[in-house]
Image 1 (cartoon, helix red, strand yellow):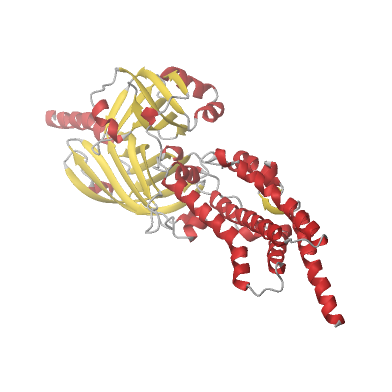
Image 2: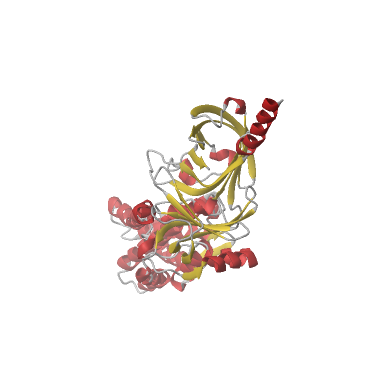
Length: 181
Length: 301
């Protein structure tokens, strides 16, 4: 009996730690639309908001479109402009999804876990289902998430002469790096 | 014999016809850009550059060269001069050639500029933007060049006169594109802030009127003074510094990589001053609060 109570007490104290929704305000999302013809169109956003629910496997990310930082002022202007991201009207990229194999991840144990995330990516109010492979790393109680995938610009009605001319990739690579507390 | 006479009369009439055509079509719309009809005359008149700046956000990167637009006002003047010279049976070839080169250069400017507007998302197709007077102007200019020195067979020379303007303009546009695309942001540390404000004041201003604040601050360089509430150093040696208020709304500065050494010892609670390019605010559904973000940020001092 005593042991059971002790055990339950232990569970009760542990649950808040493990079930807690982890968040970050400093995830990095990089996108790379460079082509052999043009090495310019790429940018990083270091202030992406993310959350991961260790219990349910729910994952969400939000990135301010305007905080993608380019080397070239003109490219940044084009990226935010009406024909591309139209960031005045659509200020955020959002992703929300679920980790399929969440039970594999041992949140309290150091290790690297391959996961698959199914979710919705919303750009300019257009939502598309995507499935991405990710890696969750747990080190000393800290969780980090890495993923890499590509997005078809045509899925989000993004077209234009630079894409036709091969100066902007039709399938930019997206890299996500999030370190949760 | 009579046939020969008709031909010579016609040949004399052609430059007059082409010259008049150049004058008339100069004043009629050449293109339709996002609901704006623009004629050749709008270039020397200054409407072209004004429209470019206000409507498409494309200011001339070399404003000291704005006077060059005025010289295109020469087109109707030169065309008129050619007609008068023909009528006076004076030598008119040179005036006609120069006028035509100006005309074909301006036509090319309209063409390449239309192409550039498509990159910006104004319209989808260059040819849908072009109006009849664009084609008439081109045809009259080419016609005028062909009718000069009509009896000489220097076809190659005429071809050179026709292409020199467009080639020159094409090179100019390539140069501009190269100039624009290779230009990089100036280090924020060297830029004077457009605004200096405290962190609570800035959060308050966004809370009070989010759209007005976004309009005012987006893409401006702002210095923000306040007490850091979190310093988030990441394994890739990038640092973010936050100023949060009691409601959880916060300002976040993403610091330039070269700021790592300067900022690594900053802790929550330190009073600091940061400068960066404001990206405006978003409302976070995840955190249920307002987030004002900054990029290309540096520590003041």
